[in-house]
Image (cartoon, rainbow, N blue to C red):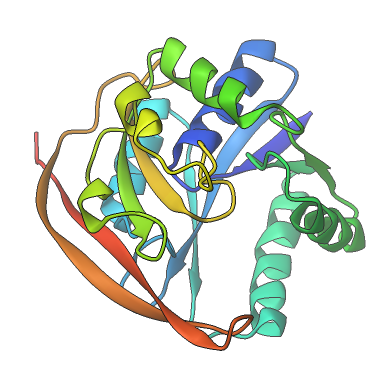
Length: 231
C-alpha cells in the first residue's frame, strides 16, 4: 500500500518508520513535514528545515514540505493539509502513517480528517508502553538530541542533551519518558534507517514563550540552538 509518513524528525517518528520499513507492509513514498512559514522550523521541535532535508536524504525518502502561517487557525491548518493530501491521493497514496503512541483525541482527530478525504491512518506504535518505545529506540541504535523542553517541567539545561538512558533517568516522575504529552521534543541524527549521520553543532539554549489557551497563561520552552555542519 502506498503511504506518506507524517514526519517530525523526532524519535517516535524514527522508530515508527523503522518498524514500517522493516515490515515491508507499506510503500512509503514521502515524508510529510509541516514548517512554520516565517522561520522554516518544525513547530515545537524547533529544528530547521535544513535538518529535516538532511534526514530525508539520509533515509532515501522524498520530503514533502508544508508551510503553515505563524498564527494559522485550525480551519486554515485543515485546509492546507487537505490540499496537500488530496494531491498525494491523486498520485496513488492511500494512507498516512503516524508515530503517535497513546493520545486518543489526537488519533480520533487524524482519523476523522483523513476519513473525509478517503484516506486511512496507521499508527505502528499505538498503545505501546512508552518505556518500551524508549527501550526499542535506544536498543535499535538510534541517536537523538533533545531539541526542546517545557521549562515548567524540565530544567533548561536538559535541552541539547542526548536522549539516552541517562536523560531518561533524570526525568521527574511526572514526565513521560517519551515526552508524549509535549514535555520535550527531539531530533534524530543517526540510526538504522539513515545511510549516514546528520552532523550538527550546538549553540546556546534559547527561551521562547507561548500562550497556553487551556490554562490561560504563558509557558516558557527552552530550545537547543542546533546548526547543520556542512560536509
